[in-house]
Amino acid sequence: MPKGSGGWGGPGRGRSGGADAHGAQGLQAKLMEGLAKAQEDLAGSIVEGSAGGGAIKVVMKGDQHVESITMAPEVVDPEDVEMLQDLLVVAVNDALEKVQGLQQQLMGSLTGGISIPGLT
Image 1 (cartoon, rainbow, N blue to C red):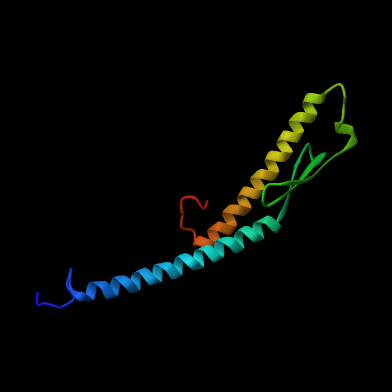
Image 2 (cartoon, rainbow, N blue to C red; image 1 turned 45 degrees about the horizontal axis):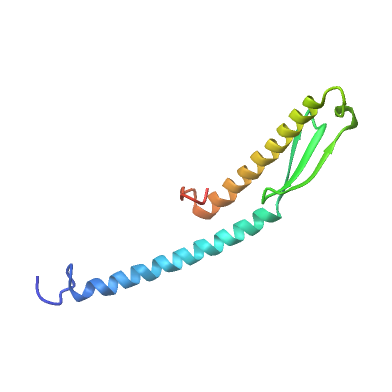
């Protein structure tokens, strides 16, 4: 191969490598910007989990912070505290599953369905 032809060690390699690296940095910057926006959207989202046919409701923000828990008076039975505890666990887990589904939806739209470790 003639000297300076741009082969594997020639001058052309540095130029194209630099362009590829610049493009990757731009893509990474756009991905990070999109990730920040998705996290902001997620934090502002609210989901509701429930149990006992709606007798207990848990309102949770997308950042997994519980905003409120409401329960119908009939589920508060001092004789059966275990049932109330079980219903609370079910309602909180229901809300968490909904937040996780929302996370997957937002991240999936950000990555175009490509699984990126650490993002989903």
